[in-house]
Length: 339
Image (cartoon, rainbow, N blue to C red; front, side):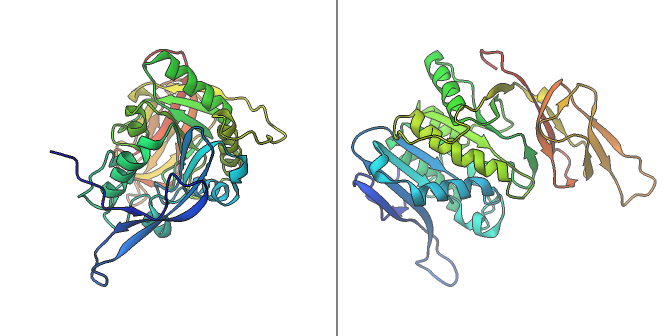
């Protein structure tokens, strides 16, 4: 049986030369509008021949630095400087962006756990399917920009998965160095198979992610790194030859998060007091933080420890956590090879 077509329509002609700004329209029937749609902003810049790049932000609505950086590039990228095509979606999950939440308020789903999606599914599944089935077949390289949102703070970084093909792995590491974040993390996540990154990698497309902030605020340095990194990535892919900024030789430290021992989880619900900031050097057995039970006056705090030496990549920040929440992620020097 043939795969069902996407229900999302685009007012963009992806093959047209020049700059186009418009919307993807995802149908959403609701009580007040039986033929309603949700409009997702998109900008495509195309000139001549060359690679197609995809830059995405706002898959989670409470991750602000990517939205700012991709929006700015979408407004300012001059088609005359481009050889190829750049597809920019600064606010993929626009309902979550406008709601300032990680999950979509339309279906209460994490869009980045819905890939490859379903054209007949919920809003998040429908958008995931459009990206996977319509956009990605056009794409040669992707940067999906994220932060740690409200759940954590992150040491400013690009990230990627281990790639079995040696040439693909080397090229992705080189792309991360070109982007120029302080860290690049080759990581094994808790739930990675249904992410946009996983869909990109399944198609053999060069893929980078980022973590350029968190703790529910706009990180000034994170925005700067994202802006600079996108421009540098355009140069790396030979889509542009624009001049670089003064610090045009940033150093990237390659790290890895190899398995669950790099993670610390909350053993109960409570108020979490972290002991370190993202980027700090930490040691196995030291306290990642203390879980407080302020509603129970005689309940002693629980110490949550690190399980590995390394550098703190993610540090919990919301205060109150649920049992099973990640409260710390430690990264180590990248050693090469399969994680």
